[in-house]
Length: 65
Image (cartoon, rainbow, N blue to C red; front, side, top):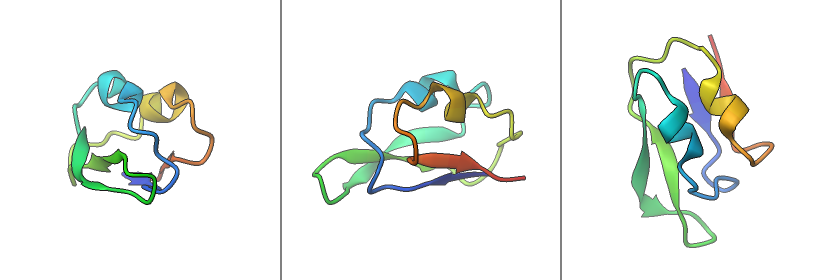
């Protein structure tokens, strides 16, 4: 499962593009910086870590098994 820290997410979408199971999407709510952050759709994650390795922001997301 992917845990996104919405306040650290810059909304670049690199993790969304990298996810092989397409379980991430840009959300509709704005964070404190006024950016639409990434959201986990709630299912389908295989904990491959592709989202984590493609994210340029160090603490924006983590993958939990």
